[in-house]
Length: 151
Ligand code: DQA
Image 1 (cartoon, rainbow, N blue to C red):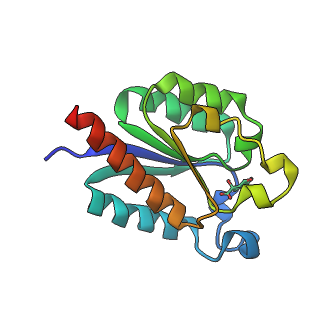
Image 2 (image 1 turned 135 degrees about the vertical axis):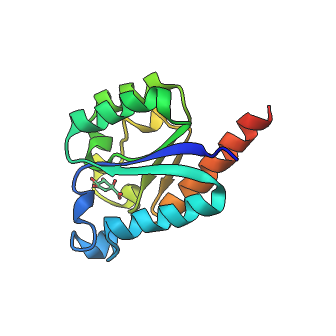
């Protein structure tokens, strides 16, 4: 059986999860989320690559490499959500399904978090569901990819 492959990309400061503003982001670490995604991927027959970088150019380079390598992208662009036309452009260039995830409910927070450059390039957006948002994003991605494969 060949597994569909999904890149799970995490932006800046998410490496600090667990100790970073736990009242907003909870106590789970990025390793905990990687494990959560790994378990979900196994259940959904997906093969995932889970990455994090604090550097915008690194995230863009990974997205460029993904153009020919993966079937879909789950991305929490973190603060770059609200600033990066470059990441939005890279996602639009890929022509693969994209699900955007935010752990916190950005719409309940500061006004500068209410706008996402990335959302226009995403097929779906999951906000404020905590770390479970990553699992929901993988479930949605599996459904999209299954639907495409059946066509
Ligand atoms: C975040 C929300 C962003 O506004 C913030 O800059 C982050 C994390 C989230 O997952 O809730 O770093 O993307």
